[in-house]
Image (cartoon, rainbow, N blue to C red; front, side, top):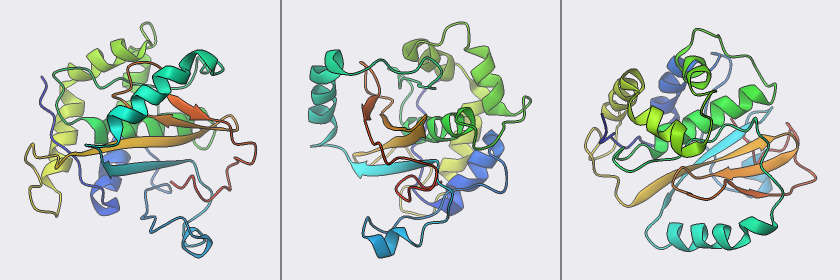
Length: 210
């Protein structure tokens, strides 16, 4: 298919979508208003992931180049970390991919179990034989049911331009707490997921809110 519509960074819009993906109903997104301790204290616990929408025009390319330059010196990415690339032709699927990264890796980390019959679990199972990020991205491009769910979510947005292909030069990425480390997952990163060590990272770290 292709030409996916951009999602709105709004828990009221994203939560129905991720619950349809397979996220248990007692989990969900909330707003994070800042990184000051008082603001982080407002974030429900426990924590599993953060999806970040940011103005990408002057940030994304230098950041990806930085990751590429450092990739050789980084430890290997765990084989069971779920990562899906945003392939050419898929349009504005970064919000969907960030949600998938958040939910799939939160489940893989043991925070909750996905129903084997849910949409995301079926996609994960279907791509097990070809788990390379570009292959997963190609499978997502061809996933009609997921695109229909995503585009319906985009149309439910409340901001100007909701339901159109105007991404307003913004991009979604996800930070996931996986096996005691923080991984920055950008579907447009063609090398490896960005990651950084964080020895204090645990399920109660308020930076990783879900």
